[in-house]
Amino acid sequence: GENVEQHPSTLSVQEGDSAVIKCTYSDSASNYFPWYKQELGKRPQLIIDIRSNVGEKKDQRIAVTLNKTAKHFSLHITETQPEDSAVYFCAAILNQAGTALIFGKGTTLSVSS
Amino acid sequence: GAVVSQHPSRVICKSGTSVKIECRSLDFQATTMFWYRQFPKQSLMLMATSNEGSKATYEQGVEKDKFLINHASLTLSTLTVTSAHPEDSSFYICSAPFSSVSSSTDTQYFGPGTRLTVL
Image 1 (spheres, rainbow over the protein chains, first blue to last red):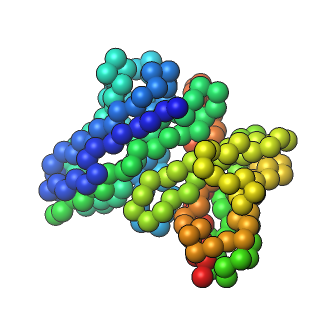
Image 2: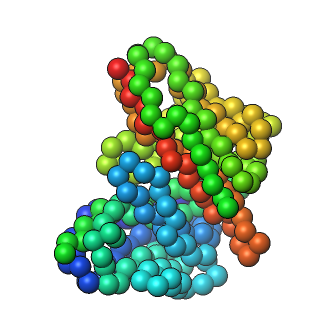
């Protein structure tokens, strides 16, 4: 089955700096990679996703890159703001028969002003 | 669109009792829903896949007789934690996939979660 590794577990940056979170996956057949932001006690919110037919996707300050050969994908947040502070999870499709997600262990991002 | 609700948001129960959690897709139909469990400061762990009209599929290590899942309709799945114990205390979150016209892969939308505390 799929296995998703996520690094780092914690990340502290100054406001305005960039933040990068990296994930690797094990199943080369996986073709969908979402990123979720979760604030304390709340549901995960989809912030960006990428499908295997593209290498990069950008939405304002957030971008995701995918390297299928190396089986890794990364989340890039530029010009970080204190409200970006949260736990970020990467995920990959569990198997091609369905749409269940396997999540990484999460990265706690702290943006200090 | 693609709103998922969950009820209740919080529940406290005594050890040995059963608790039912409802997950609803409000503006779309979902033949499949997923149930996750999240312990404090940990990731979401897939418990089971709920299938409308058929039995749920459980992940390895999840007791199907303890976590009963019923997908009663195209918009409702329920998770019943039977004979709850303190170690079952956790944040339970459901999700449902929704595909847009432009997407070939369903995007997962999560419910707000249910905080279960077993005394």
